[in-house]
Length: 142
Image 1 (cartoon, rainbow, N blue to C red):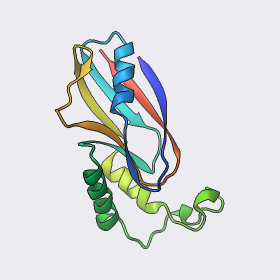
Image 2: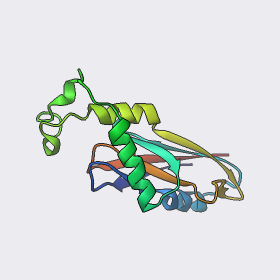
Image 3: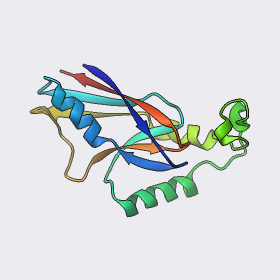
Image 4: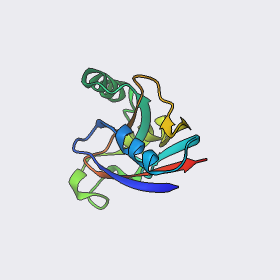
């Protein structure tokens, strides 16, 4: 079973907990055991498994900002005028680099029609170039 969901972000950089969205699709399925692959179809965001708590979200975003790529960059989309008017004049190369380094998918085993996540583990979309609407693919494997 495969399902696409849409997630809207409202900040330049933010984490969005999508765990319940994924759980809802798993519950609709008949897949009792197997795995779920969650994949985001974009190159300026990533998916992570993390605790989702306001202070930790801030810590993670501060880390990405402080330790992330600084440039100079050669990427052709440094000028957003032709690419995306909402972000005119701002390079999104750091978002591409963070996305590539962190990854666009997570894989989670399933048992009893539920994800085998730890107590505090949540699936989070890490937005690095928002606000945007992101398409996420949920693929269930039996």
